[in-house]
Image (cartoon, rainbow, N blue to C red; front, side, top):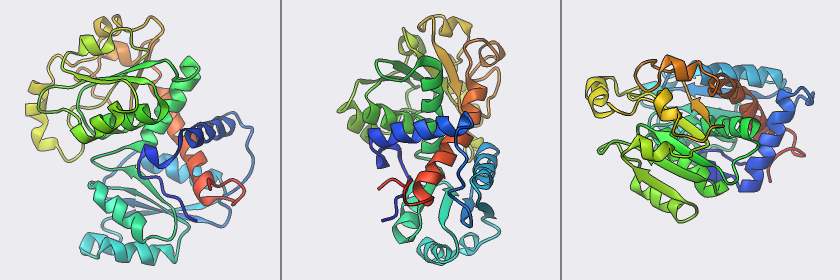
Length: 305
């Protein structure tokens, strides 16, 4: 039976551990199999990207497969073809589909009608592949996430929602500092607050107190360009600088999913400083997505059942 990856809770805690174990094996050079040999991944991009495209394309190649880039201009989705039709057509041609788009409901409909695995490369609601990379980075830097406190600073956006889902599934503490009017979805908060310690505050200093991980994102995401000035005003005081990091645990690390706007959500000193693990985090997108494709699309002996 095919599996999809649309949100973090689509996998169990044990499967997340297994995936990151496999990603580590791939990163360390201990994995030489080609589970995607003869297979093709269709990559649908309604939203452009650097990291998502390159990491999926390179990862597919390294696993022996072929990645096919499809922008909205290249396929009939951009001309109004129903998603359910595209899903069934592509399922006859390819072995997996990754989609990066705006609405979560589009990804869910694609998965519902597709007979091959569908991977959410990003929507306005969730960014699960990025948080897989973040979790791998936390484990590399801190030995794991058990007993750790994560502080999210900024917009209650798709990254905040995926961190909430990860906290609920894996059991670490999460504190989110967001301005009023930019809070995360209350349903996502409530669902995960019932599973672990989750708090939403408006003061970044409160959020980072004794945190082991401090993470943020741009204030205006793709599609929000018209709101950029209003958001800069609303997010004043949410800059992650050295003074804010000093309130975190002495061994804390800083993460950012990139691209970063130096001087807005993070200072140059923090981004390039000794606590930053941003470049490891970016590289780990490649490794977790390779593991994800191997487990969803590869040899049945490696697949998640």
